[in-house]
Length: 137
Image 1 (spheres, one colour):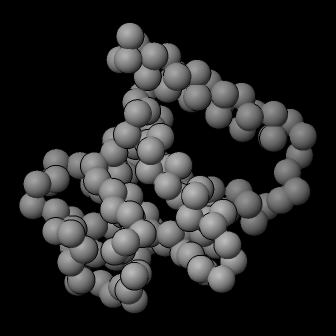
Image 2: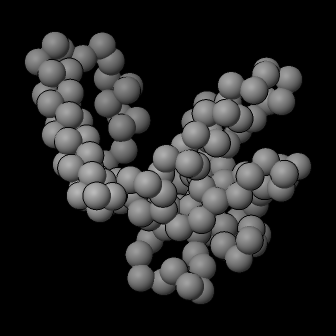
């Protein structure tokens, strides 16, 4: 079962260095690992209230299945995952960029700003889909 996590703890060889963010569905940790010293990596650990039903669990398991199959400049590289029989997590590359939290705090956004953001997301998705398609064919 999931455990209470603190900086300095080791989870499957990954050392929890710093808690970066806690949202409503997951906690993001900056982690280190002897075998992954070239790129910064993060561990995503789901927040699951087992009394609320299987939705959050299924959503996280789907993410665990999809992330390793994606590639592209806007998709974090997948490194490792563990299931709900121990401490569930996904370890992935940390892609540099600004947090979306300040943007969320600015809501509601002007329609043009929403359209600009949507266009950037669509372009990133198209690039990732094209990269993934070319590696699987």
